[in-house]
Image (cartoon, rainbow, N blue to C red; front, side):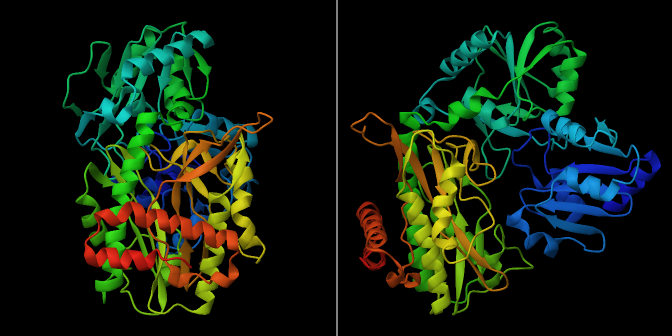
Length: 575
């Protein structure tokens, strides 16, 4: 469907606006390109955004990551791009003079909580849940192979996890729990799939009863193992019929993660719906010892691949393009043990493309590397034992003094947070300011979060924890993996970002018994010292970088050939 065709439907049905999200029925999870209504209607390829389609215009709402990218991808004659605004504000600005404006939204792709928030904010508007009249659940129907995430990687078997969930039901007085997030279902049942190119989750819902029975709702799923007797595989079309069996019984479901369509089905079946946070989110965010051990091993292998690539880039990458970089890095990673896929599309952004925070090269934008600028390389991999995400900014040719100054400020910001010690229970929002302080002191900033949670052979962006001034309210706990990724971007010139993943761990107990936490850096790859102005760094910051590089060389050098080892020794030499 084109934007014009959608607007014609709105006029025919006398609808003033239609809210289009990037979601399919699995809210907040990755989507395939053909499922992405935002991309189909506008050409915008970013990972987050909301489109307000009016009868004669459309408005694309994005955050700071896409402030530069979105205007380059959409037709300005048809779509206005607005950064930082909310849906309610946009609707009020565009339709505020109309009494009882009619606003439709896809009930499969909007959460119950989001729709209720719109209704509360704009009580004079009529919000209409579109169950499939214009858009359906946006889900591709291709077959997916489903396989077990083996106990040697998961560390906890599915029956133990289901027993834990049953215990939560008993505490809450519930007869069942409807888990709607695909990554929560995948974690709970120790299953993964090849449905998405970069994320191995299984796209299914799970209704778990207090007796450990599971109704697994998914379409076109081909299991390569026999499901245990307590798990029934059903179609999503079976949801209404199964819900009837829970009439007048209490089922927990997350208002933030369940679609309006699902909650409407629960209401129609006369289920006693209890809105509770998805209990799997917090539980899977704290990795168990087996997962932590696997994540550490995955980062070692990933560090070997990335460092071999960086050696290649520094010695053999003359006249290469961004797409050459993407393919070569993939080849190095794919040669490693337990490799499954990338964890997201590689960001290989040279020169001015680096200022576009989530830029990804394609045939139209593919830039050739030339002396005198920077390459921002943000990439990661899915291994059966862990998920990685790392960013390095590399000098191509001789960098300018301005480049080294800005890079050094970003490095100082990274070190400030990476070396922080903080009371247990500190939120990501509180930590965010620590990272920004060196940049703020120089009246500079970056318009994205400082860090996000990371799954274990699951989503590379995982909640509930994040390090962000806007969304980082959840307290960090030992066992959580987070990214640390401050940056700085000059539009039309270059971008800088330095990202490591870190494990939150407990500090030794203090004399008065207060609990504190710190970060253990997981990522192993040299930072480009050619971009470091050591005279802008304190002795403590220099010591941190030297110790980090000492660790990188010690752990990676046994896996390098002679030329690579010589290069790595120089790359990791003390400042």
